[in-house]
Length: 215
Image (cartoon, rainbow, N blue to C red):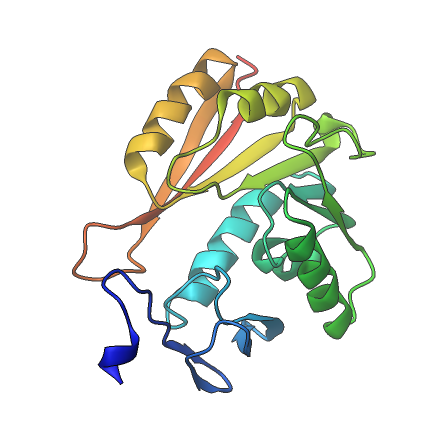
């Protein structure tokens, strides 16, 4: 009944494997390339299930191509990229500020019988403090919000000095802004692959692969 809602109210309608969900606290189920994810319907999860498997697989393939043994997903959320990549790396660590998101990610790893995934609730000032692997053996996936990565986070990332970075963004403007800082820090831009998860809108997901410039 429209009379129940005030101007500015948010209405939820999430199409998931288990039906169309309208309550934020309902558990949504999505399967991405054979991997099962469970999360609250009101939480963030990438949209467009038709292109999502190719989108996720591209990011993982780019990370794997660096030759790194370990993966860190620095904005892991409920674990989409970290868990999808677990079978391609010796170990995967997901880092999140939100403790509730970390618990959901750990649950998703468990229901997929993955034992090489670990998820850490880290303070924004100490994102890489509990990562036990050297940067030289590690590739990092980042998928920050539309505002891009903060300078504080990027300085931590540069100090960790990973073998490569796969930077996923829904906002090319802030991604290009951050690319300047990556370049100044000695990273070289490799592939750039856009994915149109939101057809007929201005929004575009873009995957950039960066590696240390050894020249």
